[in-house]
View 1 (cartoon, one colour):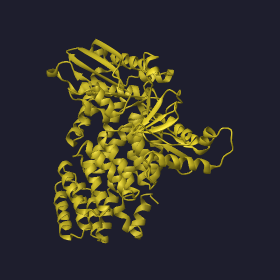
View 2 (cartoon, helix red, strand yellow):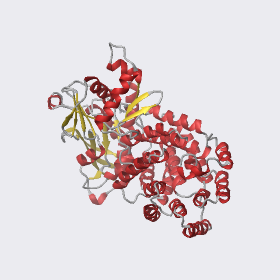
View 3 (cartoon, one colour):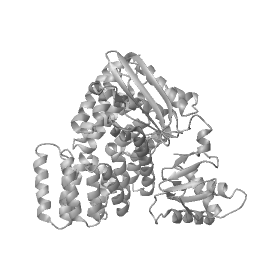
View 4 (cartoon, helix red, strand yellow):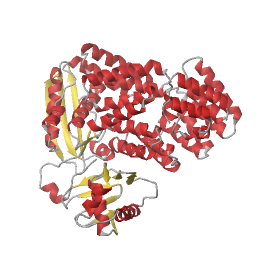
Amino acid sequence: MSLPATTPKSCFEFDEFQVDPARRLLLRSGKPLALTPRVFDTLLYFVEHCGRVIPKEELMKAIWPDAFVEENNLNQSVSAIRRALGERKGENRYLVTVPGHGYRFVSSVRKILSNEEMSSTDQVVAKSIAVLPFKPLLEKERDEALELGMADSLIIRLSSSSSDMIVRPLSSVRRYGGLEQDPLSAGRELRVESVLDGSLQRAGDRIRLSARLTNVADGRSLWVGTFDENFTDVFSLQDAISERVAGALQLHLSSDARRELMKRHTESTQAYELYLQGRYHWSRLVPNEVRKSIEFYEQAIAVDPNYALAYTGIAVAYLSLSISSDVKPADTFPKAKAAVLKALDLDESLSDAHAYLAFVHFWFDWNWAAAESEAKRGIALNANSSESHRAYGILLSQLGRHAEAIIEGERARELDPLALITRTNEALFFYYSGQFAEAEEKLKAALELEPNFWVALLSIAKVYVAQGKHQQAIEVLTKARKFSGGSAQPLSMLGYAFASMGDRVRAEAILEELNKLSAERHVPPYNFALVYNGLNDNDNTFHWLERSYESRDVMLAAFIKADPVWARLQDDNRFKSLLGRMNLV
């Protein structure tokens, strides 16, 4: 998030800190901390430009405009800021050093207006917004697909129209679909300045909708609107809401941005309804529901063959199955790739579609340069796309570029703070870089949001094994297995944990269980290789790694270079050969 320079009346907040330019103070929980004038100026410049990499030359010119200073002066100011914020060496909670470039302030910063400023204008300029799932006017007549879909459609419009405003994605807001949900509480949890919520009802060919835009800080209504339209006019209704919201937030839109705000991805209400059904089933993130979503997307495309968003939906659905549901890569990735290429052929400006193509390139094609190009293209199209930052972070991590990956992971989490997979990925970037304590802390935070999220449980088990906490690993893996929907990943990691603690009998029992499972359905070869690796059985490890290579196993590309579990094989020529054939060296 990049904040413009502000008048001295405005303050900035991040975590328990407040930066007060008027009084030139840094406060922690209301208590002032001592900073020299130059150090304060440096901190203020960071928070005003948070989220982007600031070159050292730019900083020195901004802080010492009329003096010649050496880089060491800047380094001393940065060190003083880190000490004041209580940041330990290598922690990167607030300031990240980007080697060869400069620094980036990565904490989520909120701009706080003074009472005088609040009263001087009827409307507050908001820089972040959450569009919550709409609620039914009548509880007995719920249409959850439409309620979630209306929010999703407005999110897409608003997020693509203004780079100055952060719009929380569907993955963060979908948990707020409860009938009793308080929008202000949701806004505070999502750390946004404004919330758009409302209620709707569809009765035959009519749709009745009320919407309200609220300032989270003080609960003031910034805009309220009611509509009663034919459902065939649903796109005009979305046009009206999007335009009123943009006006209430005082967004200064260029002609291109206004065109994006009013953009309709289909003119067919029938195709749109089918697409909403697809999004609803995909959002439930259960394999059977994900497969059902593909059916609805395909029906939408049958009605409107030029519906780019429906092709994007098919792509991400197949990717979801590929990474978590033990399906053969050849059965999903070609379909995902064909769908996302079609989507981009129809609409090259879809930033998330570029992120999904990046996933295809590095999980299946093993074309790392093409993957990086697509991830960067997604970010260039929408700097606030959490999916593009997440995709780029995962790629960087697997390539061993851990410092850069951590930056991208933090940015993705700032943009999509309640998305469990985004938080888990960020934690894994610390794990892959050997920062196990930081990884554990972040995974525990993710599990506080959802204690049964099996991917986070699996990931924290990896951290525990790396720390020698085998019993804790076994406990959480048992839970991960229960909630994974039958994935073989927790089972194989359980075998690795047993092997690592010297319990060969139970590790071999896991191998037997994997063999029985493979007689019923596809089990990725990587899972067998992992257990044999824990048993230090190199011949069988490489036998299964070769089978993993031949089948283009997604987990091979996802873990083989970065995951510490493979560190002991780094000097084996067979391992070097494998990495070479995958273009990873």
